[in-house]
Every structure is written in C-alpha cells, then in structure tokens.
Length: 609
Image 1 (tube, rainbow, N blue to C red):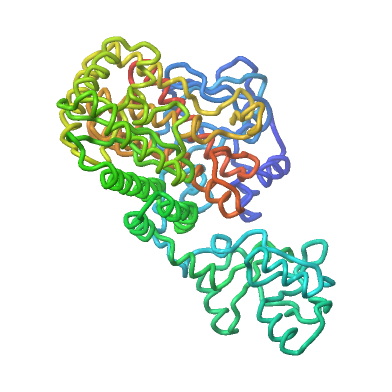
Image 2: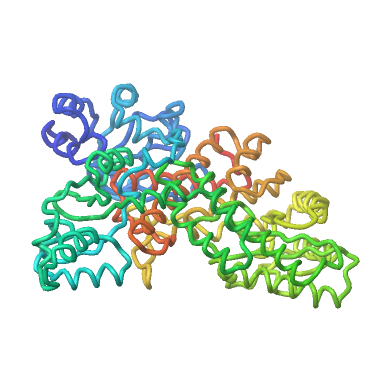
C-alpha cells in the first residue's frame, strides 16, 4: 500500500499538532511515514510487543484493549495511538485490532522522539505529564475575559438620552455601549455624559445618545491583562473600557469591576462568614464563591487548591452555624462531632455543591437529648447551609435524618454491619461514609472509629470485592465510535457529565485504594499519592492516573468558570463541541487511562506495569 507524499502532507496539515510545523519540515516529515494496511479483524499490535512507531489512522477504525483484554476505546480516522508505550520504553501497554480494513501512517520511534524534542507543540500534545501552573492570580496578570462583565447593556445610536438613563437606572449600571444592529461598537455613553452634557447644558431628553456619546472609544481585546486595563484607565483618565473581539462587543470592564475583583479572596470570604450574625448575612459571603472560582481558575491555580479553598468556606459556614446554634439552644448536653462527607468531606467542592453531613454523639447521650437538643441543632445548621447555597441533599444524607444523628456505639454498629453484609445499600452508604471528615466539635469521637473501620474493612476480602464492584458502576464517557460518549437525551443532551462520568470514577478508585491500604486521607488526590507511596499503585500507574485525574478535574473547573463568566450558573455538563481537537484528544486519553485502571482493579490488581 502506498500514498503520495502530497496526499500525506494534505492530511497532516489538517491534523494537530502536525499543522504547526513549518512547510519544509512538514513535507520532510510526510516522507518519513511507513504506510501499513491491516485487514479488518486482524491485530495491529499486541500488548507487550515492541512498537514500530506511532500509529495515525488515515482510513478505517481500530479497537484498543487494555492488558486485561477489556475494550477501552474505538478510534476513527485522524486519531493516533501507541504513544503511551513510546513515551515509556517502546513496549505496547495496550493491544490494537482493526475493526475494518484500515490504512495507517506509522511514524518511526526515532522520528517521534525527535519531533517532541525539537517542537514545543509536539511536546505539549504528547506529554501527558502535568505541567506546573502559574500561582499568581492577581489583578495585574488576569486576562480581561476574566475581569469583564459579559453581555454588557447596549442601546442603538437613535435611542433617546431619557430611555438610556432609565435603562441604566433600572439595571444599576453607569454606562451603556452604543452598537449597531450587528453588535458593532459605535460608542459609549456614561452617567457623566448625561449630567455634564444633558443636564448641565439644558438639552432636551429627546436628544439621541449619538449626540453625546464618546464615539469610537478605546477598547481592548479579551486577551489583554489587568495591567493593560489599569494603565489605560490611569493614562486616559477613563473608568470604562469596552472589550471587543474583532469588531464585536463582548464585554465591559469598569473601575468597580476591578475593585470587586481585588476584594474577592477566600480569606475575605472566610472572615466575612466567621463574623456573620445569621445565615442571611453568611449567604452574602458564600455568594462570592463563583467569583472566587473564576479568579482562581484564571490565575492558574491547581484544581486541588481551588477546591480546597472553596471547601474551606463551607467548613467555616458550618462551624459558624454550629456556634450560632449553641448560642440559641445553650451548651450541648454531651460532646458531639459534626462531620461532612461527599465532596465537602473530601475537600473537593466546586462552584456547585449540595450538603452531606452527620452527627456523632457521645455514648452518654439520652434519647431525649438526641431527639430534642441535637435534632434542633441539626435542623438549625442544615437550614442555614441551605440558605447559604448548600442545598439539601436529595438523598437525605444529612444530620437532620435521625438515622445519621446517633451515638458512637450506633455508628460502630452501622460500619460493622456494612462490612459484614455488603448488600447494595451497604455499598452505597459505605461509599459516602468512608469519606467522612470532622468539621466541628470533639474530633476524638471519630479517631478510633476511623482506624478500626479501615482495619476491619481492609481485612474483609468479600467487603472489598463488593466495594470494587460498586466502584465500577460509574464509567468514563467512552463510546464505540468517536471516543467520547455524550448524554443521549434530556436537558443535557450531547454533553459530558464531568462529575458522574468524569471525576467520580477516579474518586471511587481512590476510595478502593484507601480501603485496601488503610489510608486515612479522604481527599482523592491525597489518596492516590499515598497509594503510590504504599505500593497500592505502581509508580507508572499512579503517574498516569494522577495526570488523568488532574486533566479531568481541571477541565471541569474551566467549564464552570466559563459559565460564571457568561452570567450562567455553574454546572457539570460540558459540550465537547466547545473543546479544540487538542483538548478533546487529551480528555479522551485521560478517560482511557481511568477505564484501564478500572479494568485493572476489576481483575484484582490495580497496578500498571
């Protein structure tokens, strides 16, 4: 089988990262490929074989299986495979079979490695290792697209100044952008223009804004950074800067926006919440979480830092509500401990979180105090958290449920029963309750129970086997055709659920490693790191899974931050169409790693060689 160099060159020019090569380098590369044809149903290569190079599908379809012979991906033209083995020791870590008669471009290993060494685009594309990110999330280095108010209010040139003034008053803004019907920016009118040019000069209210607006105002692009905006405002003595992309208006930045941005920090929000007199005041602080999310993501903060800071706010709100409850109800009759589970327990809250919590009570508690004082305390705190935006748990996993407000002896009975008889409900409850973290009260009530429970669960192979089976119920969104399987119907049709099919499969895997290795950490990334240190995961397996988790979690946060910047509520449903080919390829590869690790755990290993 042969292909002309020009045919290969045209193909490469449409494929990232090859499209980034200079023309002469691309033509030279096109001559380096081996062309292979494999009949449908035949093997391309087997696990453990030495790889002849990087495979790019020119035509056809390929099925990729992991070391346990479990299908992890079906690939179509323009997809490449074999790079994971090449990036290690040149030995295939998967097997590949042609679903139909297929034509491959095979890039020899030495050429592959040379491209990575010589071209940054190739290094970035094929190196899945996590890169250090900037930690500076200050105003000066933040991009305009992060600082701006999207979809600014506009009016047309023929609008009267009276209508413009009413619009600004009703929307509580200090300016309007003047645009044509096609959203091309023509000018800007501010409250200062209204007072200085209309009121001061006694012009009629029917005057059109085109007569008083600042025509062709100075603008910046979304890629501008905070220092550009600050310098422009100071040099030109202006307080409003429209943000345009091409000729289209996409946002507005005011001095108020800059002040608000500088005022948002986790420390400020924590301080505001800690001093609040009631839940309504606390809600004003928690309302800043979305802005904090955008700021942290824009500043390049790592996902585990972002979620830790956001969770700190929930912890502070919980502790403040506990203090307010005690002020209202009086001192507790016996020692107690409030614990969080779910994402708060793991310190992995994002821009959208409900509440999952429970109460451990000292064994000396009376039924009357449990059903009286502590039931009232639980109701006060959970109601307050709901006011703050942490909505009631749909599954009623809250301290207001009498089942989850019990003395220590009852809790011990719960865990012992779940471990001895791991029926489906026990598996579900264990998945939640094994992520418990103390928030407020007497932590000693939990310490011995956690140690005893981890020891008992790790020694019960039947329980661990059931928990492994339960952990595999959430699978990465990989389909049999083009790699990414989206939701098929409903409100979020054609989207990826970056929670249930994204981070949750890794969360479940990390919990299994923690149970088997008696790892006390509840944070997912911390569990994976400790699993590697304790030998639960091999160095290479842990590295792959950590890189995959980082990419999935950070993609989820970028999606949520993007929604907030658009003025929408954050959610977990990502449309793959908004991603570039580069981003989709890496996300698919991350999901393949997770599915491979699920397969390994399901076959009793959990390690990648």
